[in-house]
Image (cartoon, rainbow, N blue to C red):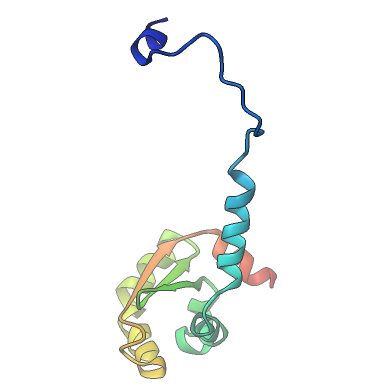
Length: 123
């Protein structure tokens, strides 16, 4: 009653000829389209990740996205995240910039995503 009075709502609901729509399906379709339109550069980086990062690191990480010259790399867990950031990040960034250009990849960000390596190993 208070909400009805405050917002001056009537007890009756307005007639609507349009059915209620869920946003779930359009959003899922949008994300699928965005995922399909990956840039050729991120695909090249993903193909060459094992050579660039090394087989051991590539087994626990995967380049996920390239947005505004920042490469986002998913890492399997926090232990590997710490290892990569402390000991390998600078050399991986240098190799990427040497291979693809410093103007193309400005920075590499790492984040934990346990699903990254499961998805990569299942491909």
